[in-house]
Image 1: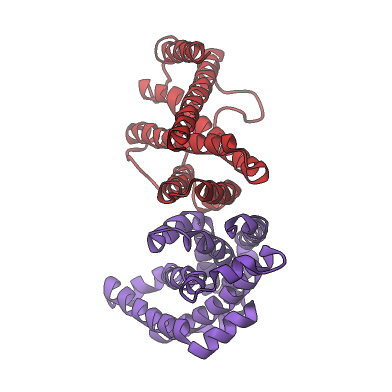
Image 2: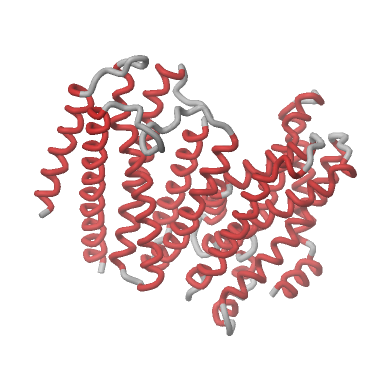
Length: 216
Length: 215
């Protein structure tokens, strides 16, 4: 499953290209909305970074199952032998890789435009981003499978996902802020533990309930 | 039976109001404003109770496929959203004279409002799916995710910031409230719980009749 999705993505590159462009546009929009004042931008940077991740994540995740519909592969998914949770794990892994790729690009763009010294904070930042992205993708993959089968899915998907991800957003922004200020990961250990707990809970619930989402 | 439940609930609510607004003493620092507590605290209790019932009913539905469990989850979510809204409204009215603002991003206000939007999304999802069986399945999955999210929301928001007065009930050590206030509060707790049961049973019955009429 992962292999198939990655192959499709590599061949077409459509999602990644479009999302790269979308990330660039987001940076422009943030800059225009807040003005050129560097001081003010620096304070809002962790929030902007995660806003960028979440907005591009919404677009990427929302497409997970829609492509299966568009390519008439939906029935194939439903009829696939074996455990449905394997499909969930496969889609989740694919989404995770896609999102991490987008986030890496966005991070470089942020570093470039906002004059960040990323090299020193990268290890800590990578931990925070990895933990937060798993939580985003786990719920996002589950909800995408549901909303793909509903009308007005483009509307419903973010409306369902954003409130559920509120604690993840709070935790990642606070942790990112601390890391960017040069604090150690130990000082935000409680946030990292919360993110780890969220990862475990979301993935477990996703694996257990995915069967019911993909019923014919 | 329904009539009886309705009557008892009404009597309980009247008794709770009389105790809270007439018999219980005026609070020394906040004055009469503090009396809104007798509505505010039981509302939030009912909201949490309702969302707990949504979780249990959702799990039962996915395991047994009992339509009654689905209707219970649906009715309970609606009542839960209503009481979450009441909690926010009464909290705002209480907050304006005591904190000087209708709204602050205080920890508990934030977590209750996240709960509010999460379960509004749940009702929205239900409203958008025509197929009854599929709607029930998806709503059950969302009901489970949302319930497991509650503790995460709680801790994240608590660490984020806090300004709310600490809860005066159910904390270890000697109570700080006179018995009469505790009694008035307990009467209101009981009355609100009865009101919840009354609303949910009525709403679940309407949902059943709707399903029968469609079939």
